[in-house]
Image (cartoon, rainbow, N blue to C red):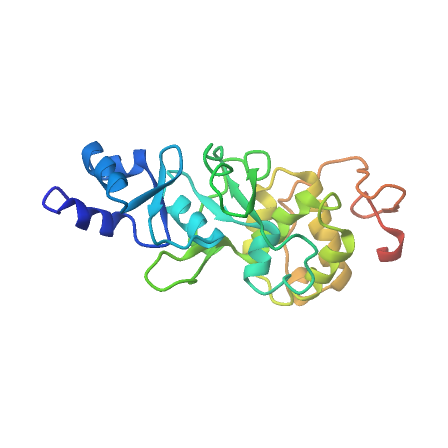
Length: 259
């Protein structure tokens, strides 16, 4: 890296339509002097304190997230409803604003994420209470979506993982009806992935809700699930207020979807 000129360093580390922090650029060998000179000469523009892009860059939420994923030490993925949208399961039914993006990670969001002018509402979900630390970030649980030539792919949760992540938001920001419609399109999920996710998931609510939605349709993959090692907790859970109690999964659900 030291043999490269500052311009070539910048070209390599910060392609057009991506972003980088001063700290990350420095960790990759770019000197403080080179960064400051790039700002003064107009090659870089400041998006927030210590956060930059190329002057001619056109940023999108994808470019911001891909840059964030490239710089982060911990896994950060697009998940939940956004991941389902990206894979064609929910976009035609979504009632959420188009500029809302759900991100999932064990770590905390960088302070600059909400400070840059991106016209995107990034909703950050900490995953320690959902997946804990036992869910290995295996490639099978994620998908890479190519969105712009020459830039990194977008890392998103696979449909199985994304649907379970979405259960956290039912019924607060995702309605029972919306989740039910999405499940109707999930005809070919992987029993092996689902068993791993169900055994690792720490949220009793998410597991019970997922199984209730899945049982309603009775797809072939659901009938292949081995739930012997899945902890579903005990006692009743009120999820739908004034709803009807499902006697198998002990959760209250809307009466018009019961049975």
